[in-house]
Length: 486
Image (tube, rainbow, N blue to C red; front, side, top):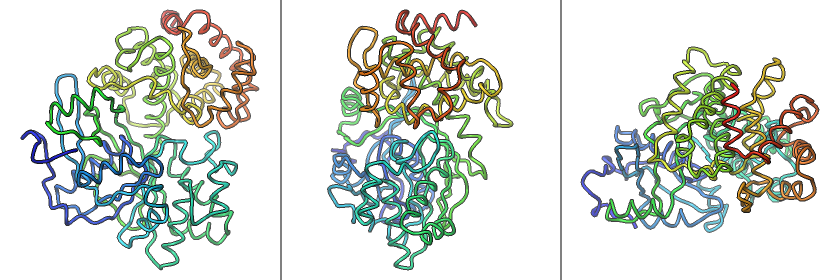
């Protein structure tokens, strides 16, 4: 358990009176990324006199919330580079709740506190119960089906937000803003879609109220935050002289672009390094396609090649060259960003990937591929198909995902697929032959590939060729061949 009086002198402690903080934000999804990103920015503001504090909520896992409570709602964040590290204690958490342990009504009640002005979330793409191919609510999602029958005991994120909106409205409280910090294009619009479309199924009047009174600012977030391992926890305890089960580690780089569209105030995050803008979409697309898209490319192909970490991929000159080429040749032409040096941006990403102090596992990035592929790779593929240009790095990334979800690595070992559609993927693999039939079956997943891509003959043919070559030659050879042919 974290003990402040046992920490080394060089660990930065909260330099503000925590009793003056107010619970003005509720954050859903107390995961590593939020702890290393939004909470850090808010903690920096507290040192400048801000009174904005967080009620942290986990809907499913309660262990982290319990550990946080046991150490006075404090935890450590360590920023790590190849040659340096810096640890600070984050103190802006004012409350912590677990949806199952404390009860979902306690969470709704926390969201209904008069001071709450923002509800934010980092629940990954799958938490929105939406269809990635369209950005709309998935009415057949089991949690949405449940919430329509049990609106006061929701299981889903959209259902939870809607229940809190209804309760605040009934009490005559000021509406809050709903801010997604997940990696989706136009994440604010997606959040608005799923909440208002769920509300519409209750009443048109409720949906109209939300459209009129609630704002859903979009954001772009960027920081590499690897999952903590037992070795990382042990090294941290040895360094601090105190254990911290809530600890998180991150790279030094930090970026947060926020659409400045809040109905009831916000922290001055611009004083903590954030950018407040009128349109986030160009920044979102740049990051999703160049960073997240290359991450997914490296995750699937790197994992198949036997590379455990992104930095391991960077030690292979062909993988490093391929990642940069994917960014600049296949992704950059699809972007609407203006006034940004995309070559310099790509080079900065490669430099970040090379940071060996950050153990970012390819397996971690490879999770939930059905939720990530549309915005990271497939939107760009469609741009190239419309423009008649080649995009073999993107297509190899798609083929790499297909090879990965087939469930067996290049050494013949089973891959444990972590994906909300893993049962459907397993069924497709079990009932299709290797090669063209497997590719065609996967392309029929409408939630991922939409209604169009499986009818694009050139696309299907090329992905099938690359998939077959991955099976016969392996990922390393395929990446090398693509780079050499360029």
